[in-house]
Length: 381
Ligand code: NAD
Ligand code: ZN
Image (cartoon, rainbow, N blue to C red; front, side, top):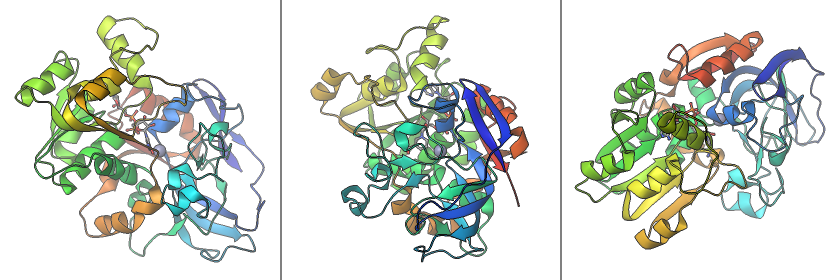
């Protein structure tokens, strides 16, 4: 079968790989119909995730058709059209039982890792992902969900990560009616977080990025204010001025690990080492939030990243909430929101490519070319 394959930082290709096989009675084999490229894939692509091995296939946001099931799969049947959440979750461990499907112990038992994820390095289980014609889906009774009749496949594929992650970002913010919410990062996740902030009763939503086309998109799609951090000066001072010097009630980090490099590069014109005290999105979030406010982090950081200015957190009495998204927990509600038109995720998709063109897709998404917001690959129809 054809599959995307990692060859080293910024080097990926399409290659022939053996067909995946059922390895466990609860496995299913899925023929992939749509598979997105995510900001989380860029951390892998850039070589920033430990233990990303040459030969791995990425891809954790996909839909497909069930081709084969193991003897203990009862919730799916061959021929079902499914959306497959990015978490590989057993459904039985102490974390899954609490709804922490992004932290499943069986999916990836390493103490510093999250749970198991499709196509996301060996620190999250070493599973191959869905940027391929076929994929093995472990624990097929737990997370994979039959796509409701009538649902557009592009809406369905965004329910595997972007929509629940934007939603969880807003949820973790504990937004109260009338709150001012600031979202750092106007990628698909930040745009969706800004959109979802209104669902929780925000009174004002501001998004901050450096890509004007994304800010323009966010203004229209998320109905929020949008500012370019290269134009507003110090974003923390800017937010303070916008809030009578109080600070935002809730700040959301939808940027993650690369932000420090990006921001510093932008500000100083040269690359600097990541260090505590540097101008990362997470620092901006912590400094721009009000005393007693909440910082919600969905941007992905590595297990050893150490960027939190803990003194500011203590002195301001800030609550920090952060996690990998528990996709399954949000699906019942979010499927309804999509069906009722409350959310229209497919509006985020700007590019559709054949699997053969996956390397172009990464280059474009990584360099923010051609006004790219979200790219979806079409391995089969
Ligand atoms: P993306 O790369 O498309 O978007 C990131 C945006 O941040 C870009 O538009 C970039 O210009 C902007 N940016 C860079 N530095 C910034 C700064 N200092 N301040 C404000 N904006 C800045 O990625 P995405 O797909 O939107 O994902 C966003 C983040 O969410 C990534 O870190 C990704 O790994 C993470 N993510 C987390 C989960 C989860 O479960 N927690 C799920 C999906 C994605
Ligand atoms: Zn993703």
